[in-house]
Image (cartoon, rainbow, N blue to C red; front, side, top):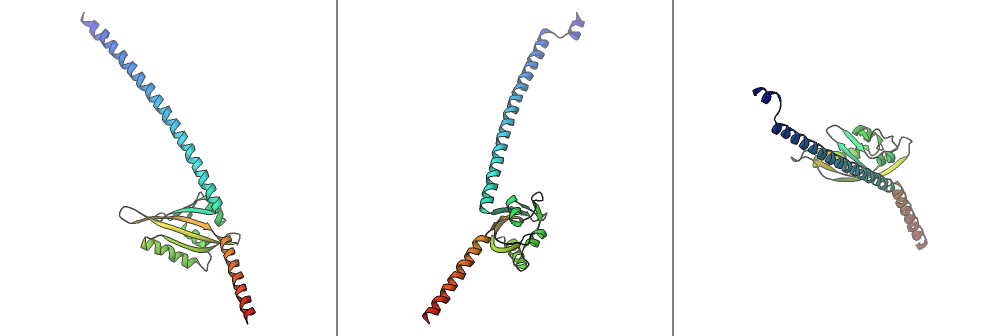
Length: 193
């Protein structure tokens, strides 16, 4: 009967389709298990990264040390929350421009800071210097800045990255010690004469 072969699958064809359906169901279950395992790993890694970020933020706060990364192509500087706190600025999604940064530098030191950064960009060398900033509330703070140039494989400048540490209290103590020594020197000279 020729019409049976064309209309109804044979037992072999039906068994083959059933086996294929079972294989697909098994693959689907395996894929679901792998996906669930991967999702758990991603969640665990995300939790670890968040904890690490919290520890870094706490360490920066305790050390009064903020970090930054300047993409020189886009002229955007990403600051850590601590660096915004040091400068007394609101965190604008962690990004400022080079011009806004320079506006925070004490006017008497702005040109020296600009020259230090330009030299680092030109020579592709690390840099470190102390400078004063003026916060929006008018308070002057002293910072130690240091950074390095980041290059591509061909040695072209991509970015600068570094830190800024508030060293105001240390500088005030150094100044007091210097003044005390100077007073002792004068007193000693006076007693000897």
